[in-house]
Amino acid sequence: MDDGAQKNPLGSVCTPDLPPTGQETQRGASVAMAARYDCTQCAQSLFGHKYILKDVAPFCVACYEQLFSSSCEVCQELIGSSSKDLSFKNRHWHGECFLCVKCERSLVDRPFAAKEDTPMCIECYSAEYSAKCHACLKTIMPGSKKMEHRGNSWHENCFACNRCQQPMGTRSFIQKEANNYCLPCYEKQFAMQCVHCKKPITTGGVNYRDQPWHKECFVCIGCKQQLAGQRFTSRDDFAYCLDCFCNLFAKKCAYCTTPISGLGGSKYISFEQRQWHNDCFNCKRCCASLVGRGFLTSKEDVLCPECVKEP
Image (cartoon, rainbow, N blue to C red; front, side):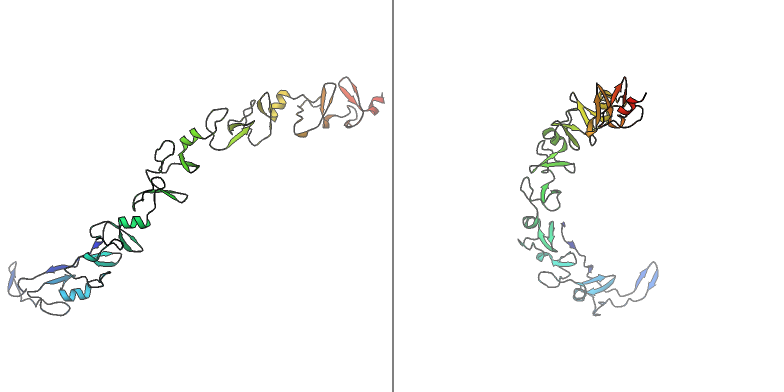
């Protein structure tokens, strides 16, 4: 958008009262008789006539207009030295020809806009080409700030949170059901709250037993390690990582004394309130596996039948 066309200077228009001839004295020095003051182009005398200086060279009005004047975009006639020459993007108009192409109102000394280099008044340009505000449905005037999102446009002050009605400017926002919300309002109205810290969950939540948690809040009750993305188990509604659960609640292997978790399909042997890992359930003497075989116990030991027969 432009505030108006540029007014091109045509040079200095002068009318000499006397020809620059005769005997003149400057600072006491004698100056010789000057040459005739003629048009640079046609050599006609300029005495008693208007003339125009172009780069210090004098021209009669006719020669100047023929050499240097522009043609009007509308009437195609030369823009004379006595006329106002309005220019825009290397195109020229008479002042009376510089009109809006739609309503034909004068654009002289008025702001205007251009479509494909064609000047139009602001009102016509807005009605023809400007976007409409998605909120107030009024035209967004050329040169004014506008906000755009998913093909829609808003006045800067109309792009506001649907809940608090405050303009959002360039702040982050969330769109829900065709309405826009600033982040604080969205969290208050729609975001789930973490069952542990009671604060809104905006991203990266965990759902456990139909309750929402922040990832950083869903931790082992024993060691406080985050449980999101790893195996865990629970007891009395508390979540535990496998290491803490086994150390706290699992029975120990009668042979290696490490916990037997029984989780994830791992197999173990249970006999007379004692448990063994499958890999640990071996004959005390010959170390042969007793899994799936008969065995006998003697105090804390388990023996295969062959070793029992030996003295």
